[in-house]
Amino acid sequence: MRSITRQKDISEIAACTESFERLYILGCGTCATVTETGGVGQVQRMRDEMQQRGKWVTGWAVLPTACDEMAEIDLRKTGDALSYAECVLVMACALGVQRIGAYVGRPAVPALDTMFIGLEQAPGHFEEVCRQCGQCILGETAGICPVTACHKGLLNGPCGGTDGGKCEVDPDRDCAYTLIYQRLEERDQLHLMHRYRPPRDHHVMLVPRMADLNREVGDEP
Amino acid sequence: MTSRLQQTLKKGEFAVTCEIGPPKGTDTCKMEEHIDMLSGQVHAMNITDNQSSVMRLSSLAGCLAIQERGGEPILQMTCRDRNRLALQGDLLFAGVRGITNVLCLTGDSVVTGDHPQAMGVFDLDSVQLLRVIEGMHRGVDAAGNSLTGDIGFYPGAVVTPGADPLQPQLIKFAQKVEAGAQFFQTQAVFDLDLLDAFMSRVRKHEVGVLAGILLLTSYRMARFVDQNLPGINVPDSLLQRMKQTSRADQRSVGVDIAAGLVSAIRENSLCDGVHIMAINAEESVLDILKSAGL
Image (cartoon, rainbow over all chains, first blue to last red; front, top):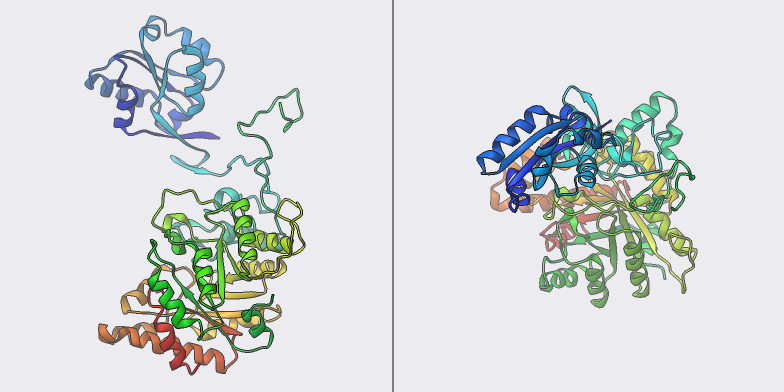
């Protein structure tokens, strides 16, 4: 599982940091390194870019895992360079931005947009396979999630836009329900295709969702 | 109240419906002109609901205009733009104003339209929307709360006979029937053998099926439809016929093609009726009907 990120346009990063002279740049050694958005190379390039734009980069580091609670211990090792900066430019996913922001007590500005949680299906190719909807139906859909894989997130079969087993919005994308149909047929489970699925319960948990191991999952805090 | 469309299909008469696109803006003159031109010629008229995800005057507003002018509307409701609260609120409004025919659609993707940054809602899908209507008939809303007053809709749905693969589409057809759909309008068909084969698969369901007839207004449009619209295949012979006609005459050839399809469907009892889609060319519906002897 990876948090998939994409670097923001440099003009947006410049606008978010325009009131600061001294920046510290943090990358992440886990997801953002794999997606080549917040690894050592990208952080160093960002340092060069910021310096060219007249910023004083007091230092940089790539934390092993920016969202982990151990990030606090790693941050202590950064010493004066971090404490001298007015803001931290974070090249990690939004989890990392929030974790770091809570520790540094100064603005933590995201340099990346967090796109989705995905699997690396081929080297360098990431796909979203779960939307964390809280009502998993993979057991009825041959292990293919239509909430994620169908462009419209339909629960009861395909729309009329199936074109040669591809999705109408993009000929390179498979129609989720064609895949589900084929796999259910292979497994002699086509009866599941006929099963009515009622509207989703968007109130499985109140947003923001929380889980506490000391309570039943789903209990209101 | 039983709608004229319902009565027609119940009596086994050949039903004819057509489609009117509402304006992008508040100038309703052209829409009203089309309504007046066609209301005496067809059993009912659809007002499209932000068709192809292009923002326009709402289907409800257009349906009221049809009613005020003495015609019978078919309210199109897509699941793309409204959540279950908004859909139900609009259904209640339609019920209050005596709009009976409701066509339930999933809706095109927002990315195909003129507001591609918008959120595609899809809180319900077409099958779920049909079931919501079924619940309203029993006096309850989607959450099971009771509703005051009576509601009686004539719910319909859509199907794509040329979908590839077809089997999942047939399962969805059965799901829609089970959810209460009583009539179907199909995606445009040009190949009558394909339509015949499709009908032989769905005849067992006791619902009215209206074949979608799309007016090809030019060779360019015919080619675009053939190449870009999922589930619609324009046979080569028709494409060639359009291509070999001068541009000025292509629309009348399109009318001939559409009228020929309508006649053949009627004479061979392939379907229970037709649904004519003359996008941005509503006035040609009259020519199609005349040429088809209706």
